Image 1 (cartoon, rainbow, N blue to C red):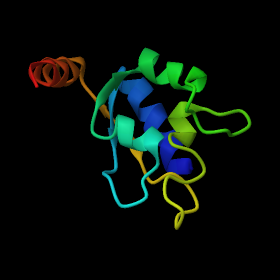
Image 2: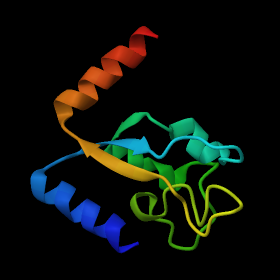
Image 3: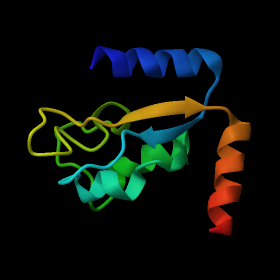
Length: 101
């Protein structure tokens, strides 16, 4: 959990407001994580996950810390996914490429 908080602090210090939901897919990955895996999001979009119908049912859920929930696979104790913060330019490039496919 500390690494997630430090990640957020560094992103804020660097002014990064976009991230890739990283971690890959394995058998049993939850739908919440599957839908977001390897996609780029703005900080505003990530904030909206706390209102999503399929969000993890965690008290005081914070999408930047909890991501897919307590665990995204039955054999894990927490979500294995991470937000990989990227520049606005990389975010725009990824969004432009995904719009073509």
